[in-house]
Image (cartoon, rainbow, N blue to C red):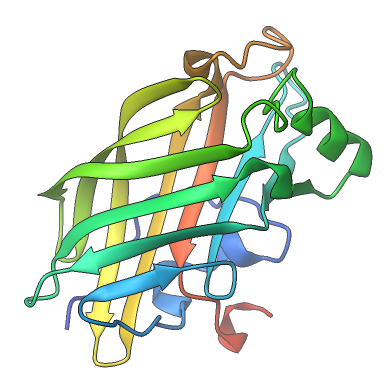
Length: 200
């Protein structure tokens, strides 16, 4: 069984303490023919945006509707990962902020109702169970190739996956508030719901 190593020392904030849970506290998702199906029932896709300057005021959020899958080989190594998000399912802890993020200043959910990621290659990372995944991220009208660190554990019970990475929102045409709102948005993607021990 592959052991999971921590990817980053930075704790990403989340609405349900989810992002405080490392991959070692996630409950495995069953594999069917080497594939784990991703949905809000067993996974999370969260984000944190911040302001520039001495008072970053982190703004925490996530997406309530998405689908996807992670595939592993017979030896338990990661082969691919993909997901598609319904951008209109975006949520935050502040209703006014949620509405603003959905309009044309940010995600423009009416014009661009979907966002997606599809891996194009998977390379071994540093340490067992760690990978560097290259893939195409589509957001708004742009598709960009990005690299994300991924930590995977495969056991008889199934698969867990955990990744933290940053994207530059301006690369996708999300330019509102430059100089006031940080261009970098931190993302957490995890397959496997936190266990009770994770703080629920």
